[in-house]
Every structure is written in structure tokens, then in C-alpha cells.
Image 1: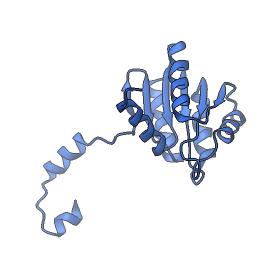
Image 2 (image 1 turned 120 degrees about the vertical axis):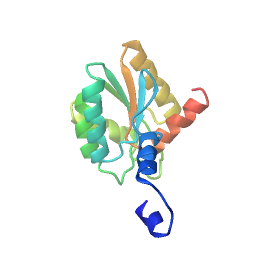
Image 3 (image 1 turned 30 degrees about the vertical axis):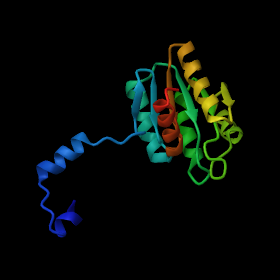
Length: 161
């Protein structure tokens, strides 16, 4: 806003306030329905914010996590924060060239004490499994770890899946 104002654009404080109040960022703490939440949470800071939100507004519901991550992110920090909140985890491959393999992600969650972890390389099958497992026990499904995963889930929602 300041850069635009320096170029001569007249932007009032009220306009800035209204813009912030009405801003929407798909894939960031977005409920797709009352039992399914998605959040990019692709770094340690994002995982912390998501964990704080889950702790405050979702727990003690059982959380079934759908997780995918890019290799160049601090996966260990994210997993350390997320693992204690999860009843179970489904990992998947979202971008095989850049992404960490679903099998390696499973091992990371197991090393943090999550016993019910399943690797499903096909993201559609992983999404379906996550939703089914959460529904079975009346819990909440949460997809996170990658903005690519968030985008994939949003695309599937648009297709009716």
C-alpha cells in the first residue's frame, strides 16, 4: 500500500482496513465443511500456528492428518509439532520431483510416536482414505504440509471429490 501511495495512488486507511477484514486466502485455515480443514502449513511457523489453532478449536476431537511436504522445507520441525495432536496420519506424494516420499514421511511421524501411519502414494486415494478414517470415528480430517497439497485438495473439492 505504501509503495502504491508513493506512486500517487490514493488509498485510505479505511480502504486498507476493509481490505484486511475481507481478505480471503484459500488453503489457509480453510474449512471445506464442518469436519475437514486444510492449511498449507509448509514451514515450522505455519505448523505452529496450525497446531495452536487445532489445540484451541479442534481438540479433543480425533484428528486424522493428510500430510505431504517438499524436501526443501523443515519437515522435521513441522512433524514434531503436528505429531502429538494426531490420532492417525496418512502421507502422500504430491510433487514427486520436489516432494518428500510418502514412505519417508511415514517414518518421520513414526519416529515422533504416531503409531497409526499409512503411506498412500496416490493423492486422490490418500485424500479419500483420510476422509473415510476421520468419518469412521467422528473425528476431523486435516490436510497440511504443502501449498501444493492444499491446492490439490481444493481442486478435488471443485470436482466434487
